[in-house]
Image (tube, rainbow, N blue to C red):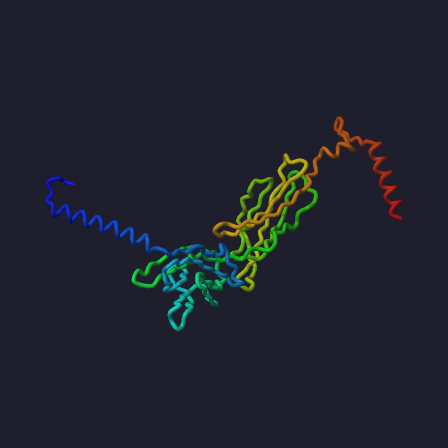
Length: 290
């Protein structure tokens, strides 16, 4: 401050400063209540109710109300001083089934609608006057029905040849939202053709659907030994949910025929010893089966 400032202004400034510091001290001292734990499921299944709980500490403060919000809409209110202590409010996207409160906690049960949505759930705890202080915490919950099983690959042959065309199908379990499907061959994602889009089944109770997608691809010419195909089912929620399944196909190489057949000078020669060995093995196998 300027030393030439009149004493009256200096005194006023000092008083205002002291009052401001005292106000901050009082606010900190009286902020005795807080939310100690907020439990909101990360994912909610539309086929069953989800339970949300809010735990709080009041210290020397008196509880005025506990309120729950879905996004900006109130869905639950607890006023211990009123005749009707608990009130429920149904809003778009959720049905409130009920709730209960104790001295330092409130639980509410909600049934989400069968829509793959994400919403914020807020618990608000307020004290009685004259301060009417408010504590809030928010967590998000996504409506999603997880698949119970891994996807299934069908149509995969045990033996394939280089250059041969494969036609496979991948079917997912029922879920909400329905899963998107990606195909991989030896960990390389396969770009689908126009007709190879993900198809959906009719919805079940709760809006769950199964998905399937066809893969048509040729075995790479240079492949030998084995070929790994993988089907990946992805639920586009936050965070994403992934389940996959893979199948290993044996690739029939031409070099395997060289044990029995060789080509010399444009003529085909058969390895007689190998043929006799195969014939003996076949006879013995038939004899043992009698």
